[in-house]
Length: 114
Image (cartoon, rainbow, N blue to C red):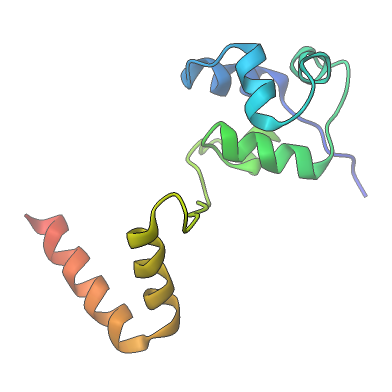
């Protein structure tokens, strides 16, 4: 099995694109600043768990940070009920009710055309 190799240039690029300092990035990722600095310099490679956290904080994908894709768009989102209860409820209904799912997709498609 090949080791995880974080592309340090992409880590820097994504952090700067979000307008985060190294200190703020490490804080949001819940890792120490020295550890973050070693990841960004390439001195140390993070675990896949840390890469997932990095991708979430930097609004990108794990594959982009690892150089497996050139698409830097985020590929997953986490919605906490406490942060956005209405959106959380919409997603829950989408996932659990086929009729609601069809209605939401139709509504979304109409909005896209407007």
